[in-house]
Amino acid sequence: MSVGARLAPDATGYARPARRQPRRGLVITYRPAVLIALVCLLGTALLPMLASKGALVFLLAGSVLVAMRPGEVLAAMRRNWLVVALVAWCLVSVTWSDYPAVTVRYGVQLLLTMLIAMALADRLPPALFVRLVLVAQLAASLASLASGRTRSDGAGYLGIYASKNALAASSGLLVIVAVAILFDRRSPRLWRLTALMSLGIGFVLLVMAKSTGALIAVAGTVAAFGVLYVLRRLEGPLRFAVVAMALILIAAAAVILSGMFAELSQAFLGTTGKDLTLTGRTDLWATAFAEIAQRPFLGTGYQAFWVVGNPGAEELWSEFGIESRSGFNFHNTLISNAVEIGLVGAAMQAVLFFGALWGVLSWTIRSPGAASIFFALFMVRQFVLMQVELVFFTQFDFTTVITLVAIFHAAGFRQAARAMDAPTARRVPRGWTQVAPVAPTPQEWPRARSPIRPRRVFSGPRLHGSDRA
Image (tube, rainbow, N blue to C red; front, side, top):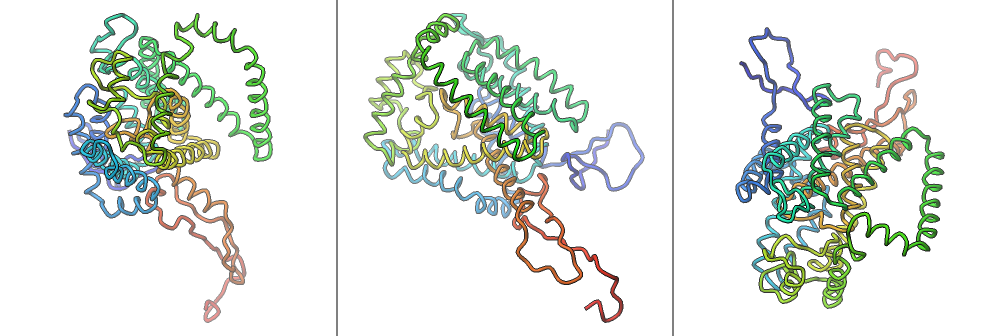
């Protein structure tokens, strides 16, 4: 077996040799950065099983990626200054944190997670990153099937995770990345077959987990994909009219259903076995709002509430029977984060998330492919889950890494889209014709500093001699 190093990336992110060479057995083309990135993603995807070893693998592989091109990671930090400001705010919260040692520890880990996510977005084309996510998540799902772990009360399958909700969230991620690759006609057949197998495994684990919230999130994500698939086939004005009409219908349906709240509540209770407070979430939110009211702008400090010894956390752990005193939160992303980093930090997170959500949805409508479809489905899923779970931003977390990469690529798409849409203000010399600006491709835009590159071609009579000047 001979192994050949990659010389130059193509549109799919794979190697194509510069010249044909005679085959000697099986030839494998690769890029060191791709292998390192895969190890990095495997480390964080398998973190529930490997624990500190998985975090170490993630850090070591990610540090190598950052060290390979530190200058470009610094350039990415300048371009994505709001993400840097958010992490800096989490670190600065050590000055008013109730538990400074906890805040500085997890704040530094969040900083490292952000740097590694920037390196992943910078070094990997979006489509290749999605394929690596499929491989890493498939490995975690197969490990869950092999573990055979279930809850002691039989109320759900656990796999390698500490809770059925965590397993369900992982399975839902496998489903949407498989759907994205399946619906991309440009994906190679082998990848589409792998995605089809992954789709089946993801649905099996999703059902075994018995998580109502995860099922609703996946259903909402699939519905959003259907809407995107229809919208991308419409022209601009008609697309706007369809969206406006859909919003009006949704508002009308909400008004009608609000008058049937009692009947719908009973039906929900009978179908899911849940109580009307979503298993105590409303009580948790009431406590969270009380905490926010005490320190609305600064919060308690990054990850300084759910700490052993904190009276508020101890009371809630006791009330909800959390003997391990870990893995618990306020079951709403923005509310949970507002408790810890205040309304200032939560506002920065909201701007980043919703800006990226809008960016990847626009990217999917204008240029559908495996990468754009995956990031759009992932962010829609995050939007659904963030209402009842904590989905970002935490250190060494697989979904946090993907969320950050989605934010970086959404910013790259917006930059490229502005380059394509905005007319140049420069005066065109006589005899030359202005043509469309050349914007970076998805493989180029992570490192694109000047996205608009006007290209001019001569359309007049041919010049000779001194007339060329």
